[in-house]
Amino acid sequence: MLQYIIKRLLLAIPILLAVVTLVFFVVRMAPGDPAQVILGDSASYESLTALRAELGLDRPVIVQYGEFLVSLVQGDLGDSIIRKQSINSIIADVLPYTVELTLAGVLLGVIIGLPLGVFSAVYRNSLWDYITRIGSLIGLSFPAFYSGILLLLAFSVYLGWFPVVSDPDMDNLGERLYMLVLPAMNLGLIMMAYVVRSARSSLLETLGEDYIRTAKAKGLPGFIILYKHGLKNALIPVITIIGLYIGVLVGNSVLTEIVFNRPGLGKLILSALDERDYNLLQGLMVIYAFLIVLVNLVTDLTYGMVDPRIRKQ
Amino acid sequence: MKYILEVKNLSTAFKLQSGWYRATTDISFVLKPNETLAVVGESGCGKSVTAFSLMGLLPEHGSRIDSGSALFKGEDLLTMPKEKLRKIRGSAMTMIFQEPMTSLNPVLTVGSQIAEAVFYHMNVGKAAARKRALELMDMVKIPDPGNRYNDYPHHLSGGMCQRIMIAMSLACEPDLVFADEPTTALDVTIQAQMIYLLHELKEKQQMSMVFITHDLGVVAHVADRVAVMYAGNIVETAPVADLFADPRHPYTKALLKSIPRLDKDNKDILPIQGMVPSIDNMPEGCRFYSRCEKKEQCRPDKFPQLLPIDNNPNHLVRCLLCE
Image (cartoon, rainbow over all chains, first blue to last red; front, side, top):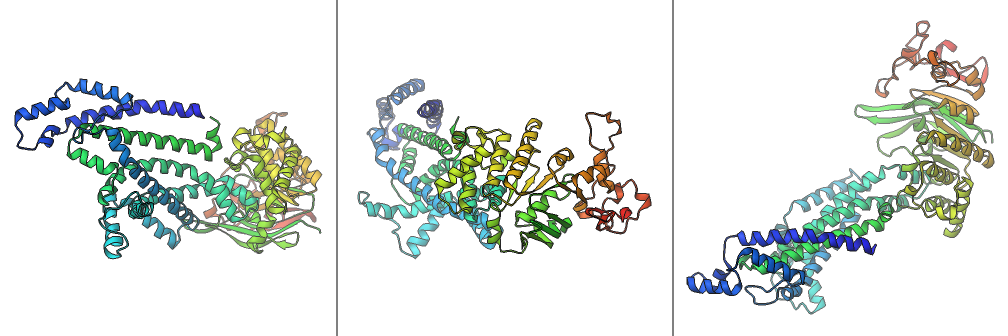
C-alpha cells in the first residue's frame, strides 16, 4: 500500500512539472509589466529598467525558469514581487480557509446529495424524483458566482441571517463557522447536484443487476437489499464523480471566495493576476495542481476500501 | 400433503410499447414432495417467467400476473401478503440462477452471502449463521471452507460460484428449489459434476425441485417428470421415461429428433422449420400450427387444451390431433 502511494506521488512529478512550465510561460506572455504596476503609469523609463533589474526580470526568460525550478525542488516558491514576502508564508496564511471551504462544500454536497439520490432512484419517476432531478439540474446550471449572489440576496439581504459584508474574527471558532455557512452552501449545492445525479443513475443500474435479484430471492428485507447489496456497489462510480468534481469545486472556490469576500487562495490569485505578480501566480498554480493530484490519490485509495476487486492489485 | 406445489392457470403478462402481452398462458402443473419436475423448452418460451412469477421476483414495473393460483403447501403464493412471501422466499422456497458469476454480490465475501440467508430466516446470531454457512460450504464440496469463507466472488471459478449459490439456496433446508438453468453458463466438464451434486443433495435433503433447462440430455438424468413448454404454454407433460419413449405432441417429437447424438450418424437430425410466434403476435389457435408437420390434417383456428392421453392422467398433451 505504502509502495503504491509513493509510486503515485512520484508519478505526480511530471504532471506538476508540466503545469508549472505552462504557467511560467503563459504568465509571461500575458500583456502587462509588474514594474509598471508597482511604479504607476507616470514612471520614467530609467526607473522602470532599474526596478526590472532589481526584480531579476531583465535576465533571459530561460534563466529565470531555471532558477524557479531549482528553488521549487527545494520547496521554496520564491518571493512575491509586489508584497516582498515569502510566497510560502503568504499561501500558508490563507490555504486553511480554502481547504476548509472546499471540504465543507464536499461534505455538505455528499451528506445531502447521497440520500436524495437514493431516494430519487427508489421512487423513480415519481413527483419527488422529478423535483429532485430538476433541482439538481438547476444546481448544475448555475455558475458559482451567480448562485453565490442569489444566496447573499436571499439569506443576507432579505432574511438578514448573515451579514453581507463583515470583517469576522477568524480566530473565534464560532464566528469562523458562522461565516463558512453561506459559501459552503454555495459550493455544496454544486457538489450536491453532481452527487444526486450520479448516485441516482448508478443505484438504478445496480438495482437491475443479477445479484440484487439473488438478494431478493434470498428473502432479505428491502432495506438490507438497498443498503448492503445495492448502495455499496453503486458507490463506486459515485466516488469517481466526487473525486473528479472536487477539482471543479476548487475552481469554483475561487469565485465563491470573491463573491463572499472570504480570505483564501481564490482572492489571492485574483490580486496576483491584477498585480502581474508572476512569482505568486506560479506558486499558487503549483499549490492548485498539487491539491488536485492529492485529491485524485485519495479517490483512488477510497476505491480499494469499497471494492475488493481493486484492493488486491 | 399430496402436493408441495399446485399451480393452476397461471398467466403472466409484460408491458410492451403497444400494450400488455402474456408471456405465459394457463400454466398448470403439480409437484409432489421429493419430486423433480424438469421444465423444458427453447429460450423465451416462458420457463423462467413461470419460476419468477411463483417466487415473486418479476420486475415491479411492467409485469403483472393476470390470472391463476399457486398453492405452496396449501397457501396461495400469488395472493399472500408480500411480507409473508418474503419470509418463505429464501427459506422454504429458494432459487438457483443461471449465471453464478453475476448472481453473487462482488463486494461481499461469499461466506457472508450464505450466512446472510441463514441470519435473516432462522433467528440465530451472527456466529451461528457463520457456522452454518461453513457447514453448507462443506456440504457442496468446497475445499477448505474456513479460508474460502472470506473470499470474494472474483476469487472463485464459475463452478465454485455455482456451488456457493447452491449452498445459499439450501441454507434453510427448503421444501422446494427452482433451478433456473443452473449449468448453462458452466464448462461442460463442470456441468455433470453440478448436476450430480444437485441430485445428491436433493435426495439427502428430501426436497422437491423444478429444474428449468433447454438441455434434454440433462432432463433424462435429473427429472422424475417433464413439462415441455412452447410459446408460453405447457404442451406436454409426462413421467420422464414415457416422454422419451412415447412423445405425443408434434413439438416434443420434433425436439427429440433434433438432438445430435454421438453414437449415430447425424444425417437425420431434423431442425424444426419456421420461427416461434412473437409475444405480440400470438395466433388465436394452436401456437405450434405454423411449424407443425401434420398441419394439413389440423385446423388453425381452435386453441387446444391440455388433456390426458390414452386415459393416462399422468400424460397430458395439448394437441388437437391427439384429442
